[in-house]
Length: 66
Image 1 (cartoon, rainbow, N blue to C red):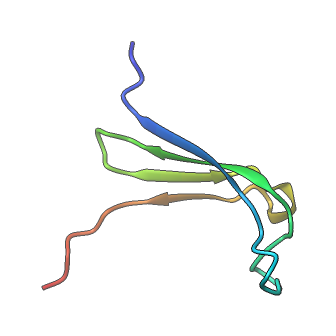
Image 2 (cartoon, helix red, strand yellow; image 1 turned 90 degrees about the vertical axis):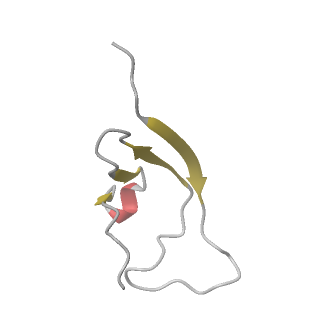
């Protein structure tokens, strides 16, 4: 079976020119993967940032508002 999803893995890093704070930045560099499920249209975000608790999010495209 062929994986029909599209994956993009990037390395996210803190912008050193900006001050971090609670819930903003952990100050580390971590790989992050975005996976688009072609069948459902859902986009899944997974970060390997251990200091942030390895956050995961699922995003769904909503119809545009009139």
